[in-house]
Image (tube, rainbow, N blue to C red; front, side):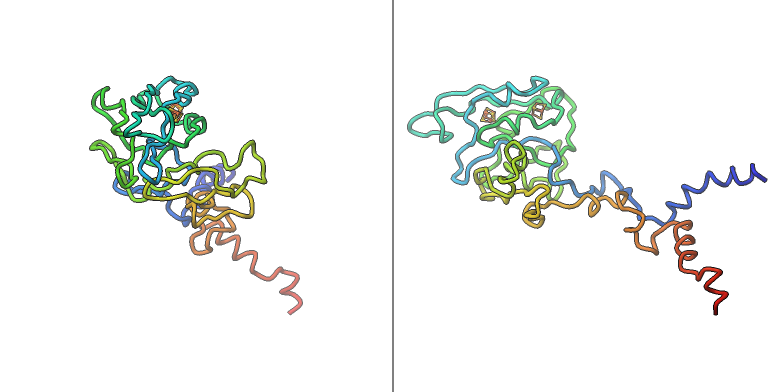
Length: 251
Ligand code: SF4
Ligand code: SF4
């Protein structure tokens, strides 16, 4: 008899999850919405007037732990400057065979020139394609990341690529939470500040979501609607609602 219960005990987990919401999607036909801070393919941003933000300082290349950024700066031509600084990024390359999407380059950049989109579905058939050049990384004349033939962009993956991806406040100082500390982007303007854990968070403006809103499997058992719970949970619930034996005896 004990063996009988041990055998069927193994099905407990299956039964518990039988009625829970389905968490799988038919990828890649359907893609799940990405988190606002998803680290995807980089973009080089431009100011609202169209000037490039990169000043060719090479800080991003210096901080990159895997040496996959190659930058060369050049003095801005006085008659048609490319960036508002003295210099601009003349050559800018990222080798995606090495990049680990740590975002240290984004944190290090003093002008919020290099940021990341949410798109990471890209693959290559030769090594040369894996090295993205400045012409490919720079946003277009509307401020939108360029879509290369081997990339799979979906709705929302090119949004919110601006400076808000950096730390929410310098040195974790709460007095800076919710304060915009970055410049506007071409075609988008100044992006809303992400408020981190403070009460000032503006989820509509930043696209932030509680993890539970995005991934049903992060739901606590009590958050799962009753009709979607597993058999065991439903029985437990029914039992809890039944009057106790002593209460029944009193009626
Ligand atoms: S995300 Fe990290 S690994 Fe990739 S280029 Fe930036 S610093 Fe280098
Ligand atoms: S992307 Fe930023 S850190 Fe890198 S060279 Fe340009 S300005 Fe400097």
